[in-house]
Structures are given as structure tokens and as C-alpha cells.
Image (cartoon, rainbow, N blue to C red; front, side, top):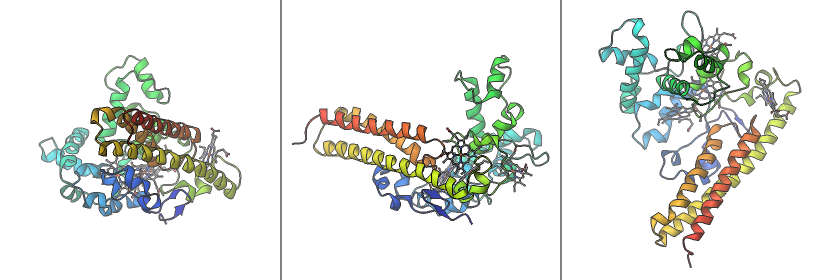
Amino acid sequence: MDIERTKHGGSEAFQKLDDDPRWREIFKGYAFSIDYREERGHAYMLSDQDMTERLKAVKQPGACLHCHSAVLPAYRQAGIAAGLPAEEAHRQEQIMKGFEIVCAMPYEEARKLVSHPVSCGDCHHPETVQLRVQRPGFLNGLRALAASNEPLPHLPSIERWRSEGRKGEYDVNAMATRQEMRSFVCGQCHVEYYFKGEGAVKISDHHVRSPLLNVSNACQTCHHFSEAEIKARAEAIQDRTRALMVRAEEAVLALIKDIESRQVAGTPSEQLKASQELQRKAQWRLDFVAAENSMGFHAPQETARVLAEAIDYARQGQLAALRVGSLE
Ligand code: HEC
Ligand code: HEC
Ligand code: HEC
Ligand code: HEC
């Protein structure tokens, strides 16, 4: 079953906006303020999208399907229909062209072109079963990253291509290591995330759901103590992270209220710019943790750092608002 809840998430599509109503306020103006649920397993990715109020209440583009369906055959067909040669040798060009066309369609129209959630061919070559990545957004992004001068010690194949004189274009499918490919196939869709560490262990479970629902497979390959103890330790980290996250939410909400009350009192908008900049910085960091789904697990220090910055920026924003006029 992929619909079980864990203490801080899991695989049940519960309404996060009811679980923590502060988010209705923080997301106001975004479609996320209407419906924002806990994500669940891969089998549901297409049906959950069909059901979300974010699609019903707001006009959305075909681009939504990019990470929620086995969309590549539809891209190829659209590319061929737009005039590209139909041969296999032109596969990647067909995909690139079709990507532009299908993403720009209204959602309802594009939806007719797909029928399955992510499928084997999204991650594997059908004959060799080797891992491959073909999603245009990911390929473009990775190529741009390779071409930059950003230090990438965690991506050895790019470092190698650079040190050998950057010949031709960086070709991820030809050059990436097996280890890198294990993360890249997921990064095609999980783009706000960077998967590291667990790449060292072979994926032998294609049943994608919260790992805390499957501690023996997901954890005991590395941690040799009892299931109950592993779970308790993970939850202790998550409880503390959650408490810090709620403090960050309160801080952002307090800043929103301060800005709002000054707007109502007629403070000129340019005087509120500094506070709004700080709101943006605080909200960005809070969102990063809230949307990331692990509630601090396996990277508690990094999560705490990001939340500490969010709280600091929000409180700085309040101080800036205080400087531009008292309300009484
Ligand atoms: C085609 C895009 C796509 C690819 C590729 C992809 N995912 Fe996902 N993944 C999603 C979507 C969309 C959801 C949310 C589905 C929902 O909530 O209905 C999701 C959900 C998840 C979840 C949450 C499960 C739960 O029940 O809470 C995990 C864990 C996950 N993916 C891991 C992975 C891993 C590991 C890989 C690579 C081996 C991967 N994903 C590759 C799109 C993708
Ligand atoms: C770049 C990839 C990507 C695109 C594009 C994308 N999604 Fe998702 N979506 C994901 C991933 C990954 C998850 C699961 C992880 C998470 O919740 O952060 C997810 C989760 C969801 C969920 C389940 C949880 C929730 O938020 O309620 C819904 C519904 C959803 N997406 C709808 C949409 C809609 C509507 C669009 C277009 C506006 C869209 N997605 C575009 C990757 C994507
Ligand atoms: C989201 C990406 C993704 C999808 C979709 C996916 N796989 Fe995999 N698969 C992987 C990864 C990652 C590995 C691990 C490869 C490695 O260890 O180098 C893997 C491994 C395998 C293996 C090797 C088994 C093993 O344990 O060593 C087989 C066989 C396989 N997949 C078949 C399939 C089939 C059949 C489907 C469709 C029903 C499928 N995969 C769908 C990502 C995916
Ligand atoms: C690929 C190996 C690997 C897997 C799989 C793995 N862990 Fe870990 N885990 C580690 C390593 C290495 C550390 C130590 C990290 C550090 O000290 O910074 C760690 C740290 C921890 C910690 C904090 C230290 C402690 O012992 O209290 C907890 C809790 C934890 N893991 C739980 C889990 C759970 C739950 C799972 C399954 C969902 C899991 N781990 C899967 C390697 C792994």
C-alpha cells in the first residue's frame, strides 16, 4: 500500500493546508494556497495530478505532465508531426522539439497524449536496461552546469570532461559514471533536490514510497540496529526539525502581518521594499525545507542552518518595517 502515513509525512495524500493552516496565509496568491498535499508513491503521480484543485481552479499548461507521466513518446510524436525525420537517429531532436510544443499546450489538450505514470523507458534503455536520461529540462540544465565554472567535486564525470579540455559538449549518457546516473534518473523530476549518499547502495526496490514505511530494506543495509530504534532516532530528528520549522513559519507570518498593516496605514510602497526583499529571502528558505519532504532527516544540520537563516531574515524584515513608521 502507498497510502500510509508516517509521523511527519509518509505516503498518504493528507491536506497539508489543514495540517498546518499557516501555509494558507504564507501561500496566499499562489495555487498552492488552494490545495497542497503530502506527496505519495510513483503509481499515483498522474492520478494525483488529475485530482488536485490546483489544476481545476487555475489554467495550467501541458508542462505539468513533464514530471508526472511517461511523456517522452508524446514528445517524439509531436516532434515528428512538426516535421522532424521519423528515424530513431533523430530521437533526441524529436524529444526536444516535442517538449516545446507539448509543454505550451493547455493541460487538458496535452493530457490526452499520455496515459501512464513514469515507466521503465524513462530511466532505462529498453534493450540494454542501462540507465539513461532524456528529459530536455534536465539535459539542458546539466549541460549549462557543465559549461559553467561552478566547482563540482560531487560530479566527477564533469570535472573530468573539463580537465580534458571541454571537448565537444558534455554528454551525460555517454560520460556519467554509473553512480552519477543512479542520482540523475531521479533528478530528471526531483529537481529541487540533490540526491547524495544513498547512491552507494544498489536500488533493488522499485516500489517508490516513503522509506520510513520500509525500514528493513531502506535502512538496515547500512544501520545494523533494530527497526524500532532506527525509526525512533529518525523521528526524534524530525520532531526537532518540525518545531524549528514552525518557529520559522511564525516568524514569516509575523513579518507578513507587519508589512500588511503598514500598507493599510498608507506607508509608501518604496519604503516597504527592504522588508519585502527580506520576506522573499525568508520565505524561499522556509519553502525549501517544507517542500523537501524529509523533515530534516539525514541532513539535520543543513536543515537547521536553512531554517535559522529564514528566522533571521524574517525578524530583520520586521525590524526594517519598524524603522519606516510606527502605526500609532
Ligand atoms: C517522471 C518523473 C519522476 C522520476 C524520474 C522520479 N520521480 Fe519520484 N516522484 C515523482 C512525482 C510526481 C512524485 C509524487 C507523486 C504523487 O504524489 O502522486 C514522486 C514521489 C516520490 C517519492 C515519495 C513517495 C511517497 O509515497 O511519499 C519518493 C521517495 C520518490 N519519488 C523517489 C524517487 C527516486 C528515488 C527516483 C529515482 C530512482 C525518482 N523518484 C524518480 C516524479 C518522479
Ligand atoms: C520538474 C518536475 C515537476 C513538474 C514540472 C511538476 N511537478 Fe508536480 N511534483 C513533482 C515532484 C517531484 C513531486 C513530489 C515531491 C514533492 O511533493 O515535492 C510532485 C508532486 C505533485 C503533487 C502531489 C503533492 C501536492 O503538491 O499536492 C501534485 C498534485 C502535483 N505535483 C501537481 C503538479 C501540477 C499541477 C504541475 C504543473 C503546474 C506540476 N505538478 C508540475 C515534480 C513536478
Ligand atoms: C525512476 C527511474 C526508474 C524507473 C522508472 C525504472 N527503473 Fe529500473 N532501475 C532504476 C535504477 C536507478 C536502478 C539501479 C541501477 C544500478 O544499480 O546501477 C534500476 C535497476 C533495475 C534493474 C536491475 C535490477 C537490480 O536490482 O540490479 C532492472 C532489471 C530494472 N531496473 C528494470 C526495470 C523495469 C522493468 C522497469 C519498469 C517496470 C523499471 N526498471 C523502471 C531506475 C528506474
Ligand atoms: C547508504 C547508507 C545509509 C542508508 C541506506 C541509511 N543511512 Fe542513516 N546514516 C548513514 C550514515 C553514513 C549516517 C551518519 C551521517 C553523519 O554522521 O553525518 C547516518 C545517520 C543516520 C541517523 C543519525 C545518527 C543516529 O544514529 O542517530 C539516523 C537516525 C539514521 N541515519 C536513520 C536512517 C533511516 C531511518 C534510514 C532508512 C530510511 C537510513 N538511516 C538509511 C547511512 C545510511
